[in-house]
Image 1 (cartoon, rainbow, N blue to C red):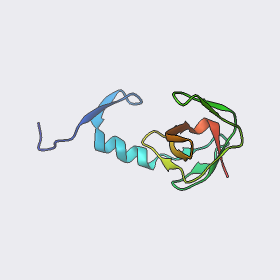
Image 2: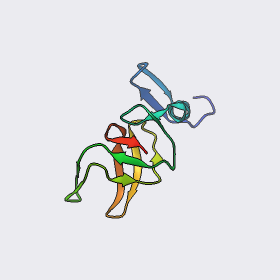
Image 3: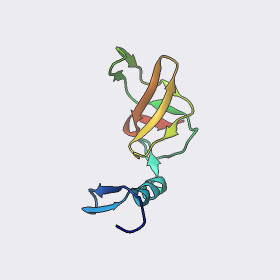
Image 4: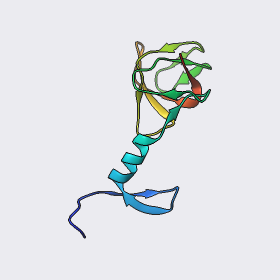
Length: 99
């Protein structure tokens, strides 16, 4: 192996094994969009567009709930959220709209 100690990850899009750092760089350039197609950034506030049952919390977040100060993840379809009742909440971007 060449001098790199990079992990390799299978890229399903290209069908190739690529360095993890290369995929991470590509993911960070990907735009994260809400259900309406608006670009989301760290720190944005979003509103839920439908009621969501939260697995493991026995709670439902109602449509119209505002989630403040989101954080983007490595997955462009998911965002980290803070909610006073639920720790470690991750939402799919298809269920939120930027405020």
